[in-house]
Image 1 (tube, one colour):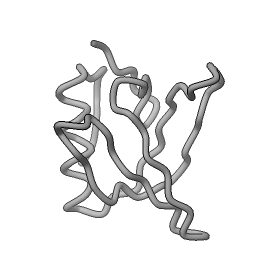
Image 2: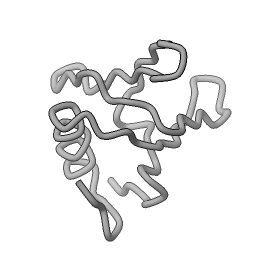
Image 3: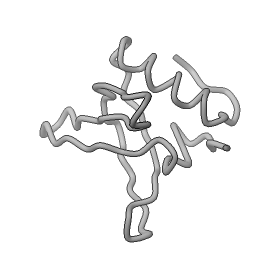
Image 4: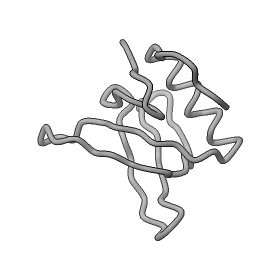
Length: 83
């Protein structure tokens, strides 16, 4: 799935859900709880939870897992995410 423009929050959630099915690797930037920036380059989206508003990511190189709140994601594949 290819993104050509900026995404709205709901579209970003749908894009990440589509990446779960297609197993496409994504690059995201998100805020961490301490205010620093989390960057995940080439990670696979493993699942999403609509009511908790989170997505789980797995690093294909070492198997590391991360859970990221959707509202804190501000870039997906170098395209901004707006509320």
